[in-house]
Image (cartoon, rainbow, N blue to C red; front, side, top):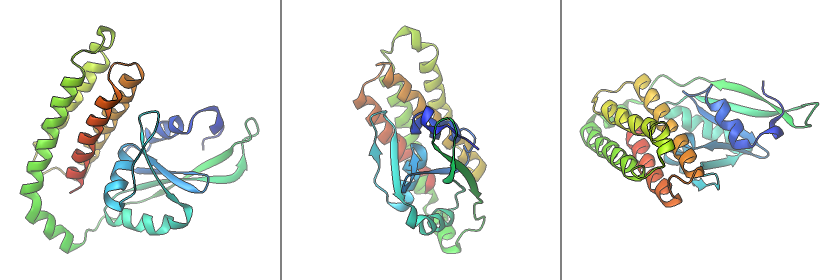
Amino acid sequence: MYSGIRKMKFIDYYKRLKEKYINHILIIQRGNFYVAINTDAEILHYILGFKLRLQKTGDYEVGFPLSSLEKNKKNIEAANYRIAIVNETEKYDEETGAKKREVAEVQRIERENKQVSDYKKVQSKKEETILLAEAKRLVKKIYQITENAPKKYRYSLVTKLQNLSVEILEEVCNENMMTEEKKKLYAKIQTIEYLLVILKETNSITTKQQGQTAQIIFNLIKSIIN
């Protein structure tokens, strides 16, 4: 499907493909491991306990050996997520010599364990309160770290970033978010992460500010999953 991977960095390839599989947890083979990045990495960190690694690019990453794919796939499906798995093939791109990759889509399991469902109902009020608090923290933090951003970004990247954080707050105020609404929420959160990386690369925010905001985003995602 995609070839010539060595012409771009792995992170760029991942982000390009993620645009197509925005509603999936995207897992891409890189050598002997499967890798997920940013929002997908944070979700896997929470539901599977994988260690998050902060890359020099400002992106978060998790990985696991190829041999544990089936076990992890079952656990991801049990948590009611769709997966897009990208495997390396034995075919090579003629121009670059890079191995080609192919996408295999795994459909989400629609059923949910009754015990888990009942537990969620009992905990819903508490979780909604935590979710709303984290969404408020995100808005406050976004406005705080972008307050002194350069003017050339203030009415483009910064405005977009601020608006997205407010939209997320408005959406989490909905006490009965459905699966599709949560997917849209994840997409907005991921866009915020991308914009934060750009602002960091342009020295509009510091590494510390990016890290602090990433922690709030992680807590927000954890609250949404619950």
